[in-house]
Length: 206
Image (tube, rainbow, N blue to C red; front, side, top):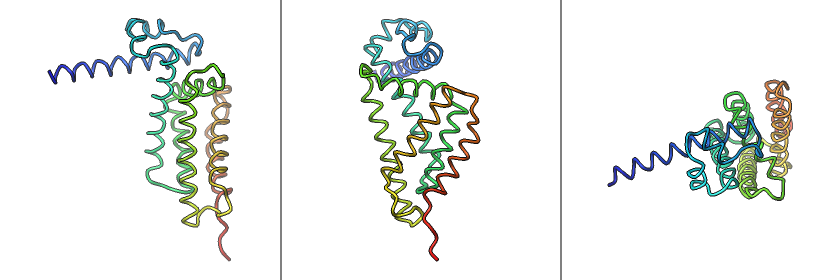
């Protein structure tokens, strides 16, 4: 019986992964409005009924796609930060972002299409996006506070405001990349790294 349960859980996980990957591809190709439960079922090789049974509705599916890619992104950031703090942690977040743009562009496009569309009051997954935003700001603020405790980051900097500004720059950079993929993303990534150091670093004592 336990073996059957494991096999069933494996089948469920595989079908969910296939549906999620199909949804990501369709969102990037056709947009949110053009992505339907039927098209996801067709592309993933499952019925619309199973897609509906698994996610309940299109809103439920969109929330799942956002959260799945967001979880992948957060794991990616944690690997890159790897215990660093202060300016180094923020620079590694910038590095993780650049790496994600280069190696996981479809997932990033899908997540940010959903994030930007969440400003629509009718978007039923707005709470999912707000939760991720809050988690980002907490993490960024924490790294800045650690840098201040170590004397690396200027004490007069407000960690929350600096975190919000960094997140806003990242969101703006990604928006520009989504609209104009030809922008010099590598050079902008390097400039962001340099700006983090010059703007946050505490002045050396005389």
